[in-house]
Image (cartoon, rainbow, N blue to C red; front, side):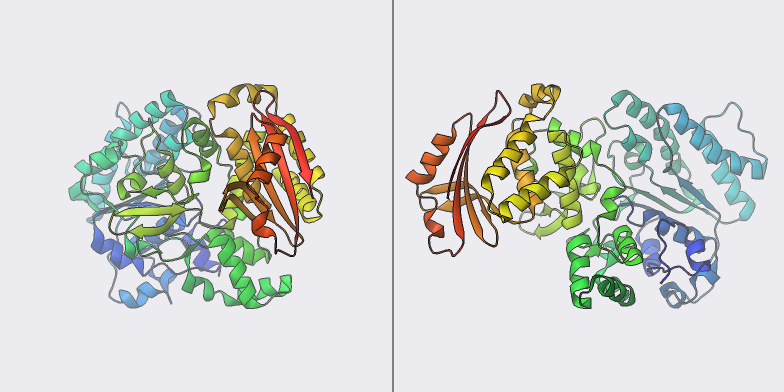
Length: 515
């Protein structure tokens, strides 16, 4: 198969024989839904390809759709429409002038075609003039497709002054759509985030947000049925790894599935990662490598929300559907950017239950959190060493490695960690998640809760932590509450670890090992 890695042009994919996951069945649904539509999906989830496909459809490029679902669903002649397609991705929006130049350059192309004057007119006035002229000259109402509408504002998160300048520019530009109703046939905006305060949403009161609707759950990404249609590619991956086809499908599901975009809980795979894995015949974290979630880490650090509580959070549809650029809701940000997804829906409370989509996202996020909190350049080396020491029954080496890790955190970061109340718990939690082993925090017994229990093939580690306490106090608690008792009949060797952690030094102050 010829996989379209990074190709977002529908015509290029169809004309050059690339694999295309047929999403044309959604065209009739879109046309029936509303004249104005908004869709939010994470980055690299196929939004741009969807918009490109719609552009070809509205332009009447019927040959590109031969053999696709729409050819049977709409066999009658298609009505052609002039299309205005604006893509706001692919720019470094370092200041407001970049955005103004981007919009002005886009409008220049149309004005040149119709010999329209742009002098002494605002961007929004020029946009309205182009739409009216297109309608009048062709006799057909205009289709407006705006891809990644939110990119300028999202790129400026953390810079409130620049965000406000971007918001002001886009305010009038998007609000123009409302006054053009009689000239428009269809309008669709896509983006990662939905900023509820922007005029495009407040001004267009008939804009339909389809992001959480059941019938559009699979409009982007790859569904379970669509993945199984790619069986030849999965078979090649299986042969490369020396595993069965069923095992290969299982790997794909573990790493790339788990996204849900509606109450229907239809499984959706990450298309970018799936295509890369099949093309390279290797399962790896492709999606996460294409962008470091700096804003997510800063949001975790600057809000009271704990990473330990992200998995299992509940949220309303309103919370998931809107973000204010001035006061970011971390739950909505994590959901809309694809680091959390819908895991369940509680009908009685009408709340969505959120969680990590898959192994690729969780491991990648934990890596970045550990690198940021611990100021390490490669957390995977650290985790690999820790895992090896545990599997080999070397608790002293395990604790000494942890001690060195904490001690090497730069002074500037140490000085500021006091504002992160959950800092130490976060680091320990992330390390445990990254180990990929049988690990349980707050392991309940009849006498209390063990801080950490780690099970390997040959060992069971019973670990008690004392923040601003001593290793002796930690070990005394293990003995007094007989924390080793639940594992008395376990064939594996039980190793007890008492660890004292000092806040003033920000590292392990003392530890005791008993085997």
